[in-house]
Length: 422
Ligand SMILES: Cc1ncc(COP(=O)(O)O)c(C=O)c1O
Image 1 (cartoon, rainbow, N blue to C red):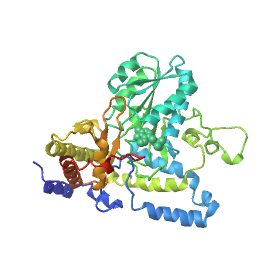
Image 2 (image 1 turned 60 degrees about the horizontal axis):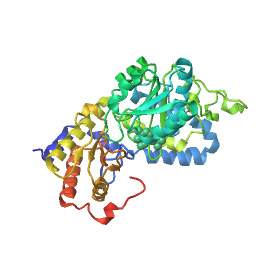
Image 3 (image 1 turned 45 degrees about the vertical axis):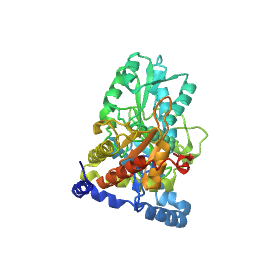
Image 4 (image 1 turned 90 degrees about the vertical axis):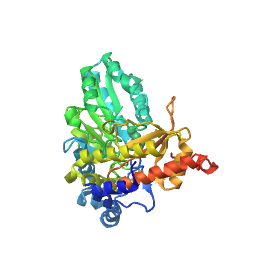
């Protein structure tokens, strides 16, 4: 049997432990939701203060030139590139993941209309994140394509039919944390004449990603989760250089080759720069820059491989303690038990997942709830962000969970009432 002292000892030996000091964490809370909204880096508030009072307040409109605001999407993009195996000049930070997905899928339809005119299927996964499926539905309607959804295990067989134009997958499943083999699936897509589009929402800043090494075609991802960019942070988009000059459909003025010529006709900027659309959100980019820096701080300590390894150890400890302390209390593991097969989260199915999570939150253990659809179970989701979580936090969280389930203290009307954001 493990003890709390043994967890404290693990923290004392943890080479990544000091990274926690980068964050402003509320006292008395164990934050297991960095997979939904990353924690606040200490550097963010002073940076925003400076951008607001100096650049905006004093510099006013001149700051577009003097503070080089126009280049911030590329500057932050270059930093994100280091986390996802892309090269400088290939990533920009802009818009939301949903909007960026529309851009890359629209470019993919243009590529495939010429390369594979007989391929009309956009293939994705049944339990992909809904926004990906909604955006894909719009793109398919415009392109005259068909969206088909397969279970994870049936994707390879469906590709083999030979009519898939684009395979669009989320690398780390938002419900279960299950990780796809990006290299194998990209190779299988290419062998079948399809392009591979990856959503890295739960991967960037969480698991090692090697976009060039796996020869992916397009990728998008979130700034507000493991990149700690703050609520509604700009997302990012990467395009393989072989496709980067294929025009995407959201042709806004900031993506024009010379926006300040104000010409009547659209001429896309070269490469990834035409994936910009409207004006860059400067305050959001400043916060995202601080968040990305908080992840890059792990580079001298082993970078993404070291972070993912620690997330795996935290998740393994959680699953082991749940097995030991919550047996018979209605929980089922919904995430892969092998840490190499999952991102930085662990999900547990429970028939009363909503009130149980509300009871946990009331006791200071912050995770979230994901509703099951199409026969999937309701889930308690726990994110294990290795930048700021300790092994002792995992111990304390499981103690609280065991107590709530054992005492049924979740079963009171206040915890059953649903909220807008889950
Ligand atoms: C896998 C995945 N893709 C996309 C999104 C949505 O991204 P955005 O809100 O930036 O459009 C989410 C949000 O949780 C997500 O989990």
